[in-house]
Length: 209
Image 1 (cartoon, rainbow, N blue to C red):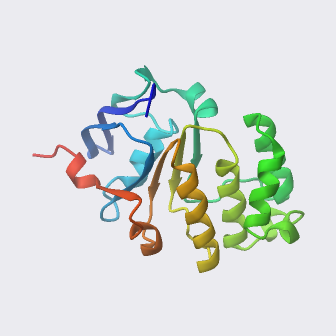
Image 2 (image 1 turned 180 degrees about the vertical axis):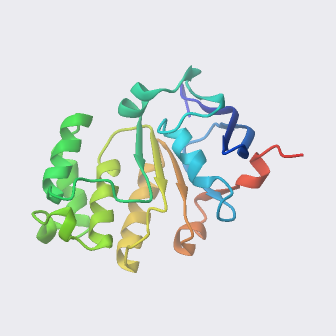
């Protein structure tokens, strides 16, 4: 991974005086897919939000190329897909992707390719409020997969997807992981059992005594 580094330095976060993440330190020195695993409530989603610069830690820093990540980094180098579908209910799938394409300054041809891969052509003019969870989730995933961001962060990315769509997602993710770092959380065994996914126990990262 020449000329690229990504580090978690002393990441600590608490809610209502309860410490969720405690002094997490970890270097990610290889491109690939990293899956944080652990019990519900162990802090997986919280850590993803911090990595994506969507949530600030109480202590510590996320470093990319030895620079502290911030909101600006989030828009230029990090693509984040939370577990919930976050899109205006009154816009269509294609309008959403056109908006993301403009913000991210990416070629729309990539978007078209991904829509075809996920068989979304017939849904592109459907408003989010009228979509199934699976269809809405596919549009959300494409909004990250279409970018050139070096860091992809995805919380439960296959929730709501059928088995065929999960297979397509796996294939795309594997190809993209050759030149970027992808962080995920998932309960989907189809994801976690893949040999190319590096599983990280979040309890082993935490420094609770």
